[in-house]
Length: 367
Figure 1: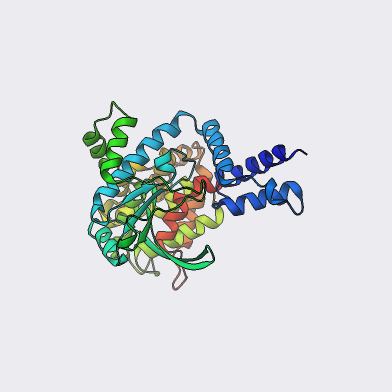
Figure 2: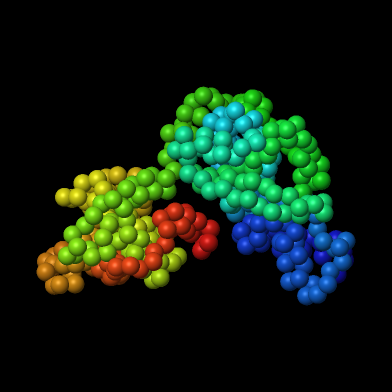
């Protein structure tokens, strides 16, 4: 097999691994692809460069995502500008695929921030009510051990903020793809870039539109978290608070249909209205979340209380026929079983953040 053809084959295979998010690092993707194709040792000169793999990833993105990719790229750039404005005192710089345009399914927004105290950055995020997780990553680069401080944010799009010391603000970081100084842009430069890239855009209106778009998982979190303080009748709910019950139901549902996003959301959110209006918690919950869930999820939540009547034989024949006519009837019965069984004392449940994180990414996991 000619070297050029072998390189291209490895590049295509590695690109698919990264596009499908089976691998996140170029080196691991190309080595796994080489082992699959060559079934043994491969010469270094036969391995494609990171740039070759990146180009193949872009080909896959164009084939599978079409015009929607362009829309998402613009939205991600606007989200980057919004976040940079919030964190402007840390001299943020946008880098990576959102700036260059080389995004793919699952791409995040990469920002460099500069502060000698990471708690200053997290304090600013706390002030704006932004959820995040911090990470200290130990790596060996150029033969020297280094520690990188990352902040991960899950919103409409994921962010990875890397915090460097203030004196690194003018440092020329090198790209792992090209080996050259990475492209980066400040708030002012990004604004000019957006006006040039999208000449018809009204930047102020566009940013307002971005701010008005609600991350549905942030909404779900804000409605679910207070449920840990909502107690229930010990006669029917010996397990205690509503959040603990909801997480038990979610875990049971996940054991049954781990790939069904709509069903899992129904399990997690079925009692969310108890923190709003306990007398009619189903209607109250649906009123709060109906714009952010599918019709199927809403139907499951709306009718989950009727499963108790089905189980004890008190439901009317007409009402039961109506339910059986729905294609999700079996899942409704399953939700009712999870609701009934999710009332155990002392069982360990998934954390709320982990449950929402799993559902958020379920499309990319099983799609």
